[in-house]
Length: 205
Length: 205
Image 1: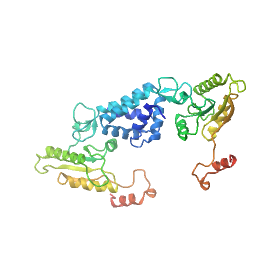
Image 2 (image 1 turned 30 degrees about the vertical axis):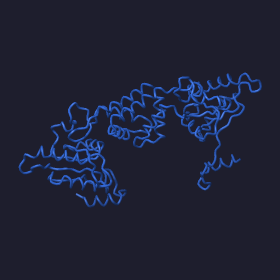
Image 3 (image 1 turned 45 degrees about the vertical axis):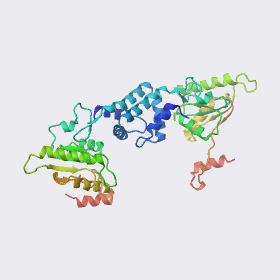
Image 4 (image 1 turned 135 degrees about the horizontal axis):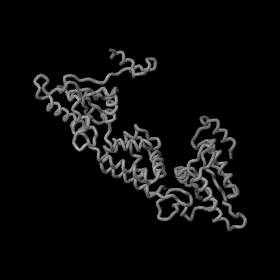
């Protein structure tokens, strides 16, 4: 029914996360009506994502000429505290707080089955190598980071996955930690759900 | 924080309808992780929308070498019954019913202010010319189409706009009509809202 280019567009874009055929159709007509310059701009924006590289240390994205990202290049950041995250967007959220001065490891989204896939295992091995390379020479803490923060989500699966990651990295850090949980800032006790309130109680400080 | 190409992507795509910065960010990372071939494919799909043309008769999209769309080219479709629609997607919905064999006029989304913009006025003039050109020679129905179906949505604004369009086209059709309204097929009387049920009563047949 639609002309071929629109069909093709809908076909490709309706497969993207949280875009269905309906939204893809609306997008197609919106883009067409926005004119050829906008089409060029949008098309180029996608094409330019080809220049994105993945940091060989932490697996965050970058577009540097080197192999590592800006955060891993930053010498002022502590090597000995490493936060493990699932997603790039999680990293951005943590960076926005401006309260973390360590490094990261992006693991990719974890399965709900409680198993690590081959890429995730490879990334954890990479971290182990990083730790041994950087802290292997010190006598007391041989091959150990100061702290590894396993920042998976505060959900049942997140907790399960954190345990699996911790087991995988056993011996590679003096301390393992997770992000604090409880009532969100600005939240009201009255409206906090039972589970959140329970955890806020358990982890009171 | 993000590499430049990702920033640019988010900037452009978060301005599209019902895509916010959050979804644009997720899309960026999804596209990056889907690999260079998928990026090329998506980028090209947008670029190819430049080949879309607008039918000079009904203003639907097409990619023919001629100036008119497949529907207007189809000689088996009745010229004398014309349905006026707001959106291309409305046309597709009507076509899917396979029960309409007339022609269309796409008007573009109508303002809630109850006024037609200059493009919409131009399109209605175009329709008047079409009618005069095609039916001007007949003696009895000189310059009149058989029927014009004003298929705006069954809302207060849709009704208001339908009245305005009808006034604008006064004399150019023997009959003006609107789509039927009432309880949707498969719906239950019990759960129909008052307004729908009221209209189903008024328009019983």
